[in-house]
Image (cartoon, rainbow, N blue to C red; front, side):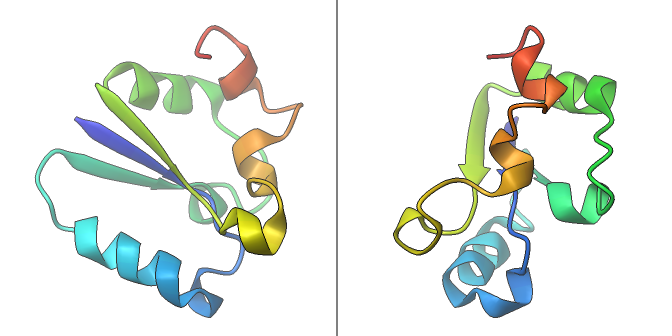
Length: 89
């Protein structure tokens, strides 16, 4: 399974991210985890995210382009984000 960690705070404002997400949305064995939809309050379910990543053979981080934001979206790389820190990466 391919898991896409989709972390765009304003997906309706991003043509390129919307096109990429729509292109893979209905593909078999592709699972999209939209962090801003799942966790609008930033309270991430660590166990659920770890399980999703452990079931994947490929992980894709989909976030605003670096040319615009100069970094990944906050939910994707927050230093306090335990699903990234604890035993996954």
